[in-house]
Length: 131
Image 1 (cartoon, helix red, strand yellow):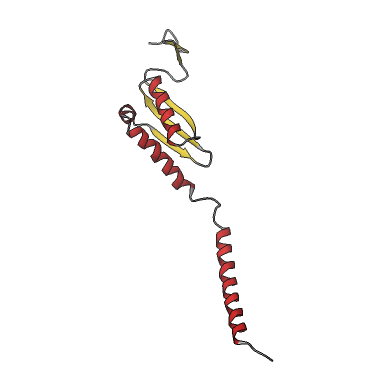
Image 2 (image 1 turned 180 degrees about the vertical axis):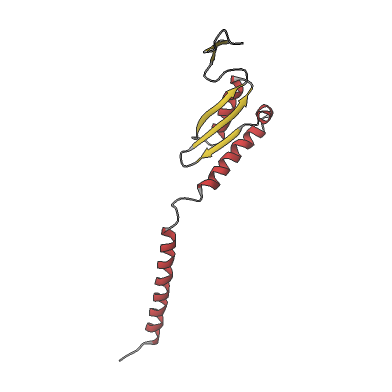
């Protein structure tokens, strides 16, 4: 029998590498596919939007809540603002912080009831007798 020391050594190395590769592949299969943990990405997106709000004096005073869900490419804004213009600005700043994100607007305007609509300076959907 002709035993080649190089051949045996090579076979041992290949066997060791095969075991290592198989082990790493099995470990990788149990991890979620993608660049990382969604909660970390959510926090990063929330921070980007909050930073945009912090750079704007009126938005900073509003102290709005931001909740991100990167799995849906969605951001939810909630809290109270002083005007429709501030509401629109908050939504625009959120969209600019991450291009393509869907902004769910749960903001309320102070002094306007939920479900009421302001057109041309007139309040609609508000009962006239309620004071």
